[in-house]
Image (cartoon, rainbow, N blue to C red):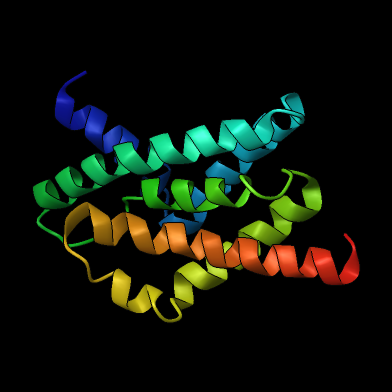
Length: 156
């Protein structure tokens, strides 16, 4: 596999970014599916897996998203969804990958990723891979904060 194709494969979230209509949603759903599998098969160790996975995906994502964006000539092409993977995975560093959290995490993450409240709307303007990756990582952090508040207030 050529390096350019490998970068495209990773940056597009295993090509989920090329699915029609709302590529970010498809990428987020793929990350939710991976989260479900990890949470199901490794429930006791999943927090550690997600910490390592988030760090690895974010680090690799910085490189591949910048390279893919440069090659495409666009600042943040919609088909690059590796950032959605990092944003979803960070949620499950802090909450279990159980059905409620998977569903609520997906909805909250998509909300924050689409509407980009402050400072996400500013961070997305950073150059290169940092702007592509960091706003989604923080959308995941916002989602975690809401989930932890919900958990604390209604004892989920």
